[in-house]
Structures are given as C-alpha cells and as structure tokens.
Length: 128
Image 1 (cartoon, one colour):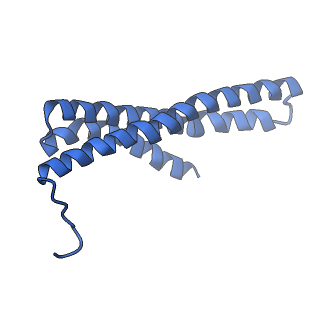
Image 2: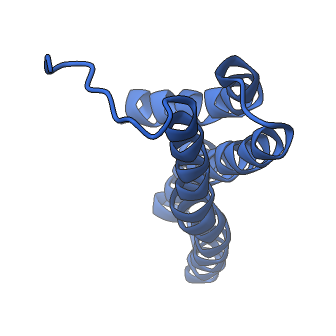
Image 3: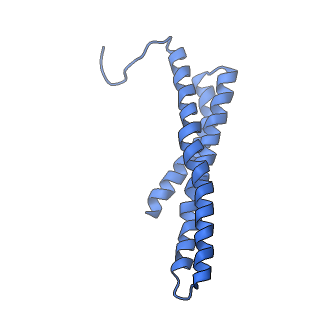
C-alpha cells in the first residue's frame, strides 16, 4: 500500500514542474500559459498535501491508537487529530486539488490544443 501512495505522491509532485514547463512547450499565449501554470501548480500542491497525510501522519496515529498502553483519553485525542487532519488535508487535496484545480488545468490545456490545431480534432490512433 505504501508503494501505491508513494507513486501517487510522485505523480502529484511532478505535476508542479510539468505545469510550469508545458505552456511554453505548447506555445500558449501569455495569459493562457500563466493560468495553466497557476491551476496546474495548485493542483499538484493540493494533491501532495492530501496524499502526504496517508504516508506520514496516519500510520503513526494508527500505531499510537492501537498501542497496548493507549488510554481511552489518548485514543480520544488521537481520534480528534485524525478527524481534523483528514478533513483539512483531504478536503484541500481531494476537492479543490483533484477536482477543481486539475479540472480547470485540463480544460485550459484542451482549449490551447484545439486552438493550436485550428479546431480540428486529430486522432492519434485511427487513420482517417
């Protein structure tokens, strides 16, 4: 499970430099390129925050909660920390990061590709 989250974290981190380099490589306008960098970078940052909680924080909380000497008060405190951080990092990472920012970034890049091709859609796989 750790390898899966780690690969997803690497993907999220790579999104930041890709978002910075792709507009120039695509020859986007200054405004479109700036918007693409902004939303792609925000998507990468928010996704990273959401994923990092599962790699670094949650295993420690789970171990402390299940420890043989954990008191009921300690378990209650751990549950509060878990709920609070999961709501914050999960809310930032999954809702704006994965849904909103990455979605807007994809739309901006799609519009730039359509403009670049003159509005013609070209298939990479099917001959015409």
